[in-house]
Image (cartoon, protein in one colour):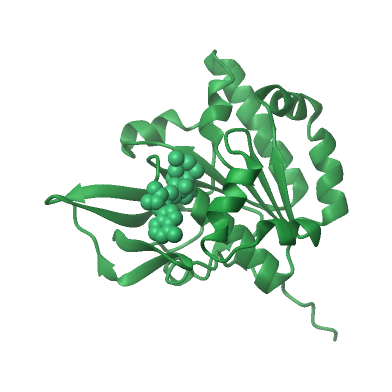
Length: 237
Ligand SMILES: Nc1ncnc2c1ncn2[C@@H]1O[C@H](COP(=O)(O)OP(=O)(O)OP(=O)(O)O)[C@@H](O)[C@H]1O
Ligand SMILES: [Mg+2]
């Protein structure tokens, strides 16, 4: 009998210390939310997730934003030794800088030009940085909800593992409830908090469907090589 090769169900994020906290990584094909205050490290985390795919799993990645400028992100990431321009030339990394109108158009069309790009590039990981400004495009709650649902349908259709960032100062019950339109499979919170006069970075997995998650908040550092999580250092605040 020929044994069917079982595809690994986990997609490693590649951030040192992180994957073993969540049974090896994000679930393949899942939609994940990374929430944190301004400057908490969301963009660096998201780029690291794409680079892990490109460098270690031959999975091309797409970064979609309508807040950040390509030149600026490329310049910021060079500090960590990440040459996104080179990976772009090699067809492994795609940076899509969209205006709010273009995003709306893509959603109305159910994929449009991104469909074609994903098919051509065979991208397996996708980042939307951030969905906060995406939500601001829609004033009324119903329209927002419909657009979020359409976005989710698209992500599922594309058969990618998605990471959506959300800018959020206070990650509390209110935040969790106000974001129900984003029916995500996981929520990861990043903190940059002042504890007894010193700012500390920390990370917590708030939910991850089908995964045993730790109940602790771990120290996180931004080093010359990017983000590192220290699973041995618990942060209390
Ligand atoms: N080379 C570096 N070494 C250490 N820390 C760095 C380095 N580069 C950036 N940082 C830190 O990372 C922070 C920015 O991280 P990042 O851009 O990922 O945050 P963000 O959550 O995406 O912020 P925003 O909400 O503004 O988009 C900076 O505020 C800075 O403190
Ligand atoms: Mg950012």
